[in-house]
Length: 328
Image 1 (tube, rainbow, N blue to C red):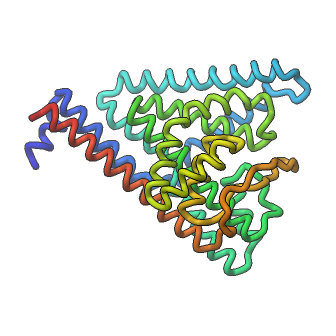
Image 2: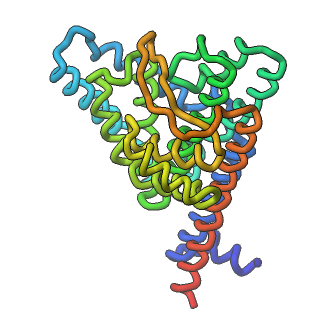
Image 3: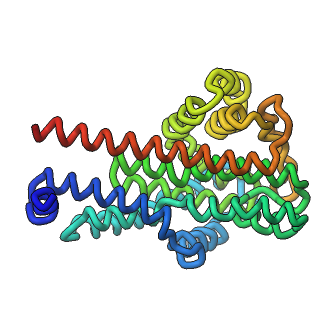
């Protein structure tokens, strides 16, 4: 054990850097699970305010569609490249870039706070505190919650837990593994922009279309990997059938794949119409099962955590295999 520790920290070889990077990666995942920052003090809160103010300056409702598309594209690209350039410079001059990379990953991941909030929902609904339940979900949802019934609140909780965990945990981790901290940070900044901008305006606003299309392309592969993991864990045949029948015809196919496999795994109905800024958007209902119950929330949390363990095992096995292949 002492020899391994010395090899990691006291040598400057390529192997030591790879081992250090692996330990930092695992520590970042553990820290996000048990030492997550309060939402108020998280850097994403500040970035949301900055991007929201940026949108207010460049977005004009009466502008033509082509001008909104152009302004939306520039408002996405310029801040993104500035932030990534600064972080890249810090990584280049850092004595131990692996530690800074782990810090970036830790700050980019966001799953545990959402899970803790969703776990409180059944207690509030059992106590008939629907107003408190709506306020709890409003923090995490872009859709309106003021008119949601109890089944609607449960369905919204399951959907947002599935979608946000996939995009803000698994997809961030995917980009970190294939492209490093700058790639993961770039994707995370795009999700923050998209969330802050879409909270104030309708989803089909031309200004939001460039960033919506870009995030769709980036999420295409990791979302499908997560959907396949969900399908393999339970009701595989039904999940694949639902992907063909519902997912590929959903308003957003990435979302459709996730809701299709989750609906099959939980044996509950998901999807359906939703209101954004007072406007009703028709979305297909996924599944022929009954509406979800309070117990469905517990099953969703358990299933998401099962997929996390599966990904963690795969990461460890792949890292160990690569190390042994090049050092034996």
